[in-house]
Picture: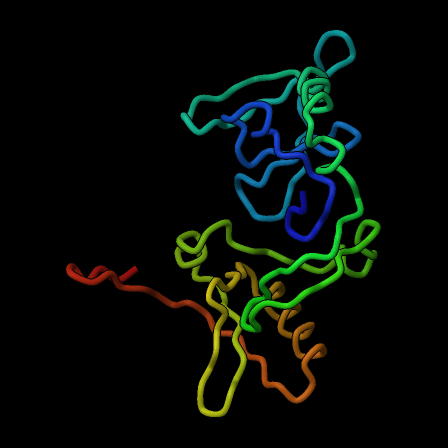
Length: 193
C-alpha cells in the first residue's frame, strides 16, 4: 500500500479491524497516521522475550496494547502481505489536485533523498483541513480558478509552496496558485468557523 506517496505499508486493519490508521513495513516497523497524514514511526516499549509492546488508539476510544512481534507474525500470514509491503508498484491512474486524472508510473524503489526531504503536510480529511485553515492549490484558466474535485488540503505553508513549485515545473506556462482557507459557514444556522 502507498501511504502519503511512500510504498510498502501493510494496513494493520486487515488483521485487526480496530487498528485503522496503523501500518507495518516489511521489517516489522509500525507506523501511525492517526494524528497527521505523514506516517510516523512508533517506538513502543521493551517487553519480555526481546519484543516490544505498542499502545494503539482504537475506533472505540479505548487503548489497546499489543506485542509488535505477534502483530508481525499475524500480518506476514495475511494473503496481501507480500503485495502491500513490496517497494515496487505498477502503473496506475491517480487523481492529481487541480489537474484531473493522469496516468503515472510509480517508483520502483523508495523515494529519492530530495523527495524524502520535501515537506508534505496534508490534512487527514476535508473537515480537518478546513479546521486547520489549510491551503488549496488551483490553476488559472482564463478568468477562472480551477480546483480539483477532491483537492488535497495542505496544513503548512512549506508544504503548499513545495507542491506549487513542483506543479509549476511540470506545467510550463500554466499559472498555479494557492489559497488559504480563512473560514467557513454552514447553511441554515450560519456558524462562522
